[in-house]
Image: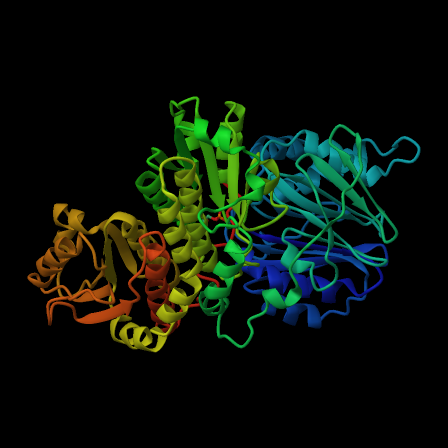
Amino acid sequence: MCGIVGYVGTRKAATIILEGLKRLEYRGYDSAGLAIIEGGKIKVVKTVGRVEQLAKEVAKVHLTGTVGLGHTRWATHGGVTVANAHPHLSSDGKFALIHNGVIENYSQIKAFLLTKGYTFTSETDTEVLCNLIAYHYAKERKPAAGESAFLESVRKALRHVEGTYGIAALCADFPDQMVAARKASPLILGVGENEYLLASDASALVSSTRNVVYLKDGELVLITPKEFSISTLDQADVSPVVDRIDWKVEDANMDGFSHFMEKEIFEQPLALENAMRGRFSEDSSTALFGGLNLTPAELRQVDRFMFCACGTAWHACLVAEHLIERFARIPVEVDYSSEFRYRNAPLDPQTLFFVVSQSGETIDTLAALREAKRKGYRVMAINNVVGSSIAREADGGIFQHVGPEIGVASTKAFTSQLLIGAMVALYVARLRDMSFNDGVDYVKALKGVPDLVRQALKQAAHIKGIAQRYAHYQDFLFLGRLSLFPIALEGALKLKEISYIHSEGYPAAEMKHGPIALISEKCPSVFFAPKGEIFNKVVSSMQEIKARKGPVIAITTEGAELPPGLADEVITIPDCHEAVLPIVATIPIQLLSYYIAVERGCDVDKPRNLAKSVTVE
Ligand code: F6R
């Protein structure tokens, strides 16, 4: 949600900031801006729209400064206007500020600042914080020896703030300094040669450096071209730990595909291989996880799992629930992170928590993790971003290892979450009653999943044809049963988020308890109808739709025999073990939504109103 980039060094800051903002645009893209210090003054350029538009505006101005910051916005306070775009200047023009997050007590602070003569040109909480920094600077200009008055003003202002923030600030009186701070909104410092970069996401840094320091909540950093120092809100010094990012800039390029989403769909066989690499026992009868920090004996004590997540990741949890209950016979509860944190659910003492989050920064999931930890539970994270807040705060976990996911609609992160959920089910099942032979069969199925996905991807041209025939519909139903019910939910979410078509997911048999009222020739239904014990029941549901003239798109498995003429369109995926069926069945719904969105001319990678990671409540 919103992207932050900062630069302090010897190169032209505007060029580096624009490049970083382009890479961060998937984080938020309703407006963008940058501020550069030049000749002791802060120069600001802002626009509504994309970074491309900002680059055009910047090209009209001669900006040569080597210290600056930039922002892409996803509106929280105030509409999408140039005035509300970041950076914001204090009313005396001395400070520039960019901000991700929400300042909850901004109206009280604003009322106070108005009485002190500060003026405001935007509706944002960010401008309020910027003026609060200016207020403290004007009020208490004499810092102790060795202190930066700029840093101290930011620190003082932040002590009065309630809410969340990742901020970066410039001060005209300190033209070679930048101050940044975070609370529940990610910030990473890139440590280059004679230069420092700051970003809310590693993808904006990797073209300059892979050495990074992950700032923690409550930390501030003062950056100059020669050095940086980290301290806390309470003025305690912090010794920085420099980490190395393990992916390269090429991972964040499109590689000849038309969209990141398309690239990420097609790289799933490799992503799944990476997610399972080195995670099977030598005898290939179970999974192994180095990062759980739990002994088998401790895991045997667990008598309930609780999974929390949002959106697509929540769908992955529903599949994990099905597989863990089915194979390990342990009860599982799944909750939306945003609900869990407020509903004060009674929990069994032997519950093990899992939070699932691609970005590791989703604020609701982070809050759920903290709530569970506060109650004394151990929390494991399934997460894709090493160094993310969730990865750092969890007691243990499993990294997805699928590389950066740039497309706003989650694809490869989702299937890798499904895979890891299936592996967790295997691991705990083998600690209980699953036999060696069943474990071996299960592992074989998991190892085969990249190839099954490759086969499913071969349907792309066929699915594109279906998409072209169905792109004009305004309503869709997605219907599946058992482990494919969550995939139906995921299909409906994928379609609505990138093509703006109304779509709903239901357990196929539930359709007759209400949604069937929607059925007409104008509302197609996408059915999952795999071979197996409930195949005939799904066929009956299809017949009920056909009887009401609803078009049917069936996703079925090899060897399943659909009555001729029942489905208007048939997509066939390989028949497979039930642990991997949800993964393979996801491919057609990803391709169908992608091609429908392309056919409708939608901006697939940057759907309206969305942002890649949701760091506000
Ligand atoms: C949909 C999508 C979102 C995310 C959700 C959670 O395609 O990507 O629904 O799944 O915002 O994000 P993470 O996994 O980063 O916590």
